[in-house]
Length: 284
Ligand code: KIV
Image 1 (spheres, protein in one colour):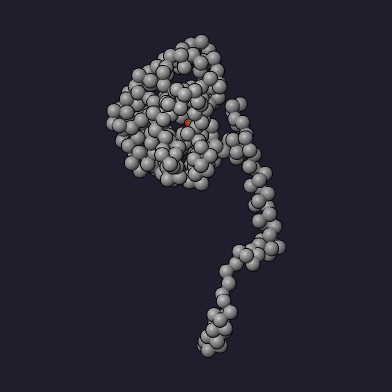
Image 2 (tube, rainbow, N blue to C red):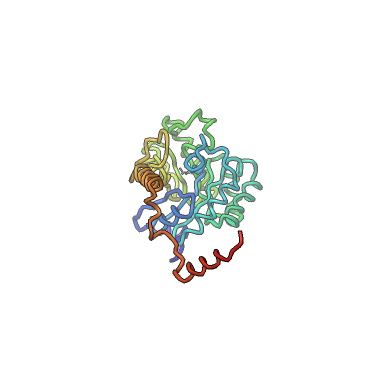
């Protein structure tokens, strides 16, 4: 199977199709997503909250991200894999941004990187792209900047806020991003953003007019805990499935029903007899 390239993604959109993106953080889930036909997998820094159980995404390290990105990349035969650059791995300087994006590609074996921000990161985006690495942009609600916004809030709800988002989208398109994720933005504002840029716009809580949608895998599987944003739809709730499998296992272990004969290893009759003889001769 051939891996999807950026031009394959563009072609699919130009032919009138939508792109399906999803996060993954490990080999088995990435393999299932790839086999199901997902187009783009993002190894999101949302790993911090969804997998590591942290409050926010600010303390996830680049080593953690690269470790998981490499596992996801190994699982994918078709999907394009994007590594999400964590907090303070690109904001500090163009040099840091290039160096750390390079680590995602050479160690994480992914196809591109994503980073959060608009005009404030345009120079860093340009530097990474000039070094040969494709970049996906991300505007709207930026979890790495939640202290600045005073929480996880829908962005672009005021006329001025919407103009700021349009300016950001234009700036990162000029810097060279191949696509833009728009998160938690009123749908009419996303539609406006789409009018001002040519690159594909992928939405998460940004309405249906986008070129595709991205979602956190554990959200659609009902495997997130606590409050979820309005845009989350649980497609299959695996919580009761997992809980009942674990409860059954506990019951069968406690009753010695598990492991049954078919899950056990056996020594053949001849070896058993030889063992008996050896044990008789053995001095203890
Ligand atoms: O980290 C992440 O999962 C993301 C998506 C929500 C876009 O950035």
